[in-house]
Length: 438
Image (cartoon, rainbow, N blue to C red; front, side):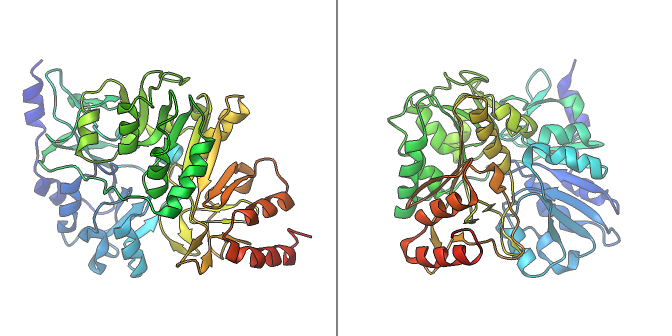
């Protein structure tokens, strides 16, 4: 079979793809760092008569014209599973070009397909090999399930994209159109943790036992935690996002993946995001499996892992343990993502007798200490990301509150004990007013 000739027959230009978009069509796209940058950078060039186009995205790396300019209201709607800075900015301006899609990551695509037809999947891929296989490279998170669901599959093929294993390989026969691009993958900006985040990290590191299978993302707290794990043994990784810190722990011999229940000896992730060093690490690395999020984030799958430990961050938590991680009142900030999935999976590991832990971390205050992030009740309009009946551990720089199985009275006492000392008396007074304490 001459796969090269088949590949050449499917080549098209971004201009011809955009020119062919029809009113009312629905597009679903891949995840950072595999965002189809050429498509997004040219989507605003659709014909002026085209209206009602929907585009499903996750964590856009840039404020692309198609959703950041008022002229596209009514023409293109960015339906976003997880807001990034550009999406927030458009929403804050009051533009009717972006809206949020409530979801739990492991079932996001199943929910989407139940609600509408997907005309196009537009994603990114690594170069094709001699057997006719490309790979979805650094993300199979939603991509693999979208490929099954979409009427047409379009891939931007990038020679800089690493080749990966797991659910990532895709055969040229599954692809309808190829657009060749050549750009660097977006890279994570590594930021040193603050003193507060380091203190939170110390408490979390104490909760992580030898042999634990960990899930954590990016940011100051996860990075602080990772720096305190070098005395641990035989950690494993089953995570939504594979990070730079995990690679460093592997190179130091801390992560071995040898005690995992599932896929021993291998990293399991839904997507990879870091610097070029991390992309080089995963390239042609058979110990890294990039899998569909419907598998990696399924709480019942996660719950099978020995000592599954999930670490997620919150914006605020109320005195009974309700966690809000995606909005500040009615101002949408990010998304649920995999937080509830992975937290529930870690708790399921505990319920299965496998010693799992679900950990939610947050700084005790905001605005230079003026505002407590532990609150009597969530502000009006705030979504509950992790319900109180699911909660396990809450950690601030002042300690650990283990809430699973506790009464509302016990929870309020525990939460006040890890609040900033300057706010504890007010929280106690408010707790008495609403009947949590007596």
